[in-house]
Image (cartoon, rainbow over all chains, first blue to last red; front, top):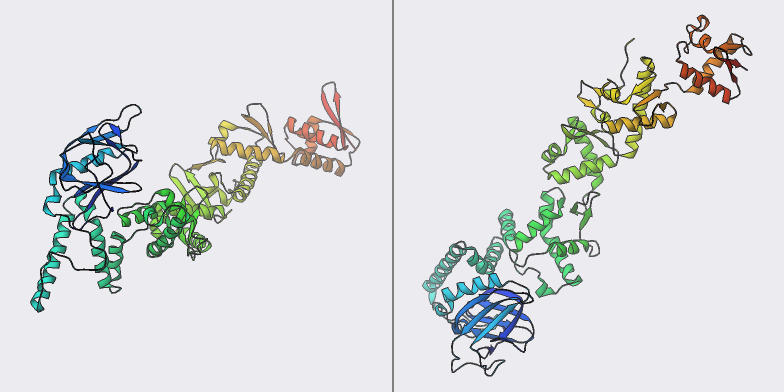
Length: 370
Length: 174
């Protein structure tokens, strides 16, 4: 444990986060470290552990590592054997230790993925390619190592460089899914900048780009958990769902919303509970959306302006027109999902506008002539 | 004269028990009316439930729809509640269909008796249902059990008295 140094927890230039796992306890050799359970983070350069304070260790210090399976009453562990301490090591939580190995105990699991990533990083040894330098505060300073540019030629060269970099990013990102995860943040930035450039001229493209990634997704870490989080989430949902709802006639099943939202977020996915809780806040936040539960238990999000009475009246017209309709036929006619079209027909039946014909041929709805 | 089916008979939803309560009420009313008029037309007084499922009343082959056994039971129960049906056995496999209720028959018979001025006379049951005098009356040919119930209804009303004689029953009208 004496290989760790105090850290401010910031990632350095060229250093990227690979994986993080909470619920990890550190062991100095075989002894439990005098620390609580915290979050273990693996970057391209270091192994970081964070709780109330933060310390890290360069990956170059790792000699070898192995998995230790869970036992009765014992969590699974990764045992990491370390090289000798370098002379210029910064101070850390332990002055010295009699052990030259540590253990990470995964109290909330996640060891398999962590081990896999650690293996990958130790194989690739990315810290050797891009030596980490001091972190630079956001917003100021230029980046070292770029081509110096003078005059028109310089500007042209910079643009060309930027284009190549973008190209490289895109091809690299699609090479490997795990690489994509790392590149995702950059991709999101890219799509946002492109979207800004196009602005509202090409509306379709912009909405597709936005559906690929939202910058700054509202996460529990940024906004905390609980009602405040759900409130922010509700507002974000309102922004996101206006266009898709218009397209789908003002109503979407909650499962469709869940898929749409999480596909857009990429990382930091929403749990179903969070989605439902956020949707419940629509009314109190005076947002123009509503969460609605049908008798059958199906939940939908609909535009407040959407009038179900109109829908039912039009449903009666449709059915009368065609004599009779099944849920599938009705869905096809309106471009709704079968689930929602069935709900609408059932509602019309409940209101007495339609009656049903249930036979071996299936369930059909007729205008209620009784 | 052939039986005239009501419009509902060709309407497929008619053969599905409707979940909507209001719709169901109307549907059942139509079914009761159809069952009764069919029985009246064919002078059916009893129904066997198993046979009923295959009978044209509950089974429209033209539109390939028929009432489920469950639905038939619901219709029969509705008829029973209205006084038009009586179960002959505990298992509810056979029933009496009274497309005219005993009270209604009783009234008809009493009207006829009054009309011919035979109040206070005694009639045998046979005379009433099969006698020459009653030919042309609606209750002519009425089955015994139905006739008896009708007279019992009149008796309850104080308009008749059933008398047991040596070779059967008779009735005196007031």
